[in-house]
Structure formats: structure tokens, C-alpha cells
Length: 366
Image (cartoon, rainbow, N blue to C red):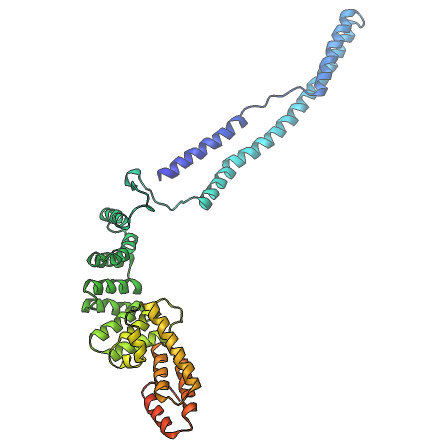
């Protein structure tokens, strides 16, 4: 409010500086016709003094010249005043309306009218670009102690605390974010993740509640779906966990950033889901990052597909390829692999029977 008051005073001073000289009466300089009449009056006076004309004639001439002089002066003054009045009105209109509008437009375009006040005492001694992450977190926490209902501040602080390993503080920050910003599927899922992290990675009943709330708000919330599968895995239900992760891969584009994480989870999953990946792929992937694991799995699956196109007698290889495609969520490729496998083994009834038996229960048509 104080900023706008100062700006208003500055604008008023600028307008006053423009209008002040416009309010003063213009100084008129004698025109050419007026000067001629004055010269004629002086000449008549000289002729009378020299005796060239009589006093009566001189007086009559002076009266006539004076009448013409007054008429000329009034005409010139009216023209000048009219011209000056138009100019002054135009300049005054610009000063009163145009100048504030133009200044306001420039400020809205290049200024920051929505930026809050930042008192000098509250400014950090070290520029934010040079401050450490811990220092910045401490400054935000100090701000939130004074402004505990700043939902935006809690939302920004929560993931940073989780990244720093301060899981208990992260849970509190996420709870405040939900309370002061409102409930969304993303915020509920983030809170559930923080609760699970605080429990050492275990999806507790409290964390599971948050994921369920998130899925009620948005059935496609990725993080909630992922941790629901983690909870199923921890409950000893690997098939259920694998089904959730495979469905996530099936319905997602190939370039989503979380795909490697889900592929890694499937590769490490015990029970039936683990058997759906080639054993050499799962073994080699143990010590890799999620991105490296996904890249390696994709490469090995493609190499297996290329080998089977050259030699289609390997029924086990076809089954491994179909299951790998399903784990990766590439259902169309899995169906195409089934068609190619049946075509390759169609000449051998025994191989075809083994193939069909292996394909049972995979949920693929045809």
C-alpha cells in the first residue's frame, strides 16, 4: 500500500510540473499590422509638429488610426489566445490522463505489481544463489514459524525436507500443505510417500490410507498406484503388485519419467512376476540404476525378438519374449509375438501345444 501511495505522489508531482506553466497567461508580442498603425500615429504627430497638417486634420487622422489599431490588436490577441488554449488543453489532457495510463501500462508490463513486501531486516545477508540448501531451508522454516498458515511455503518446503532425509519434518510439512492449500490427489500421495519414508520404506496403514484417498480423488494418480503395488508386495501378494505395475506400463507413454522405476520394480519382484522376465536379464540388472536397468532390459528383449525371427523353433524363447513384453506394458508387441510364435511353430503340433499351454492365463486373445 505504501508503494502505491508513493507512486501516486510522484505522478501527481509530475502532472503538477506540467500544468503549472500552462496556467500562466501567455505574453503577446505585437504583430506586424499593429506596429504599422503605431508608426502612422507617430508620423501624424511629427507632421502636426512640423506644421505640415492642421491640428484638426491631425486629430481626425489619429482617431481613425487609433480605431484601426485597437481592432487589429483585439484580432491578433484573440487568435493567439485561441491557439494557446488548444495547445494547453491538449498538453493538460495528456498530463492528466495519458501520462498516468502510460506509466501504469509500462509498470504492469515490466514491473512486479504482485510481488509482496520484502523488508530490509528480513533479507538474507547472503544472496540465495550463493547460500547452501540448508541455509535456505532454515530461512524458509523461520518464515513459516512467523507465518504458519502460508500453504505455499509448506508445499515448497516439504519435498526439500524429504530429499534431505528429514522425513518426520517432511510429514509435518505435507500435512500443513494439505490443510492450508486444500486436498488434492497429488498432495495426498506425497503425504503417503513421506509417511512411508519415515517408516523406513514400509507402507504403513496410515500411509495406505493416504494413497487410498488420493486414488479416490484421481484413480490415475501415478504415485498412489505405485505405492499401492508396493504395499501389496509387502503384504506377500506379488501377483497383485505385478498386475498393478503392468497396468501402469500398459496405459502410459513410453517416455514417461517413472517408467524405469516401475520396470525395475517388476524386475526385482519375487514370485510369478519375476518369472516373467528372462533370468539373465534379472540377474544382470541387480546392480544398475533404474534408467540403466530399463535400457538394458529393452535391449535384451529386442535382441531376443531378433533371434527368434531367425530361429523360431525355441518355444521357451517365445514364451519369455511374450511375458517380457507384458512386463514392459507393451501389449501390442506381446500379441504380435504370439502370432509370430504360432506361425513359426505351426508346422510342429507338439511345439504348438507346448506354446499354447504356456500362453494360457496371460490374458492375450487369439
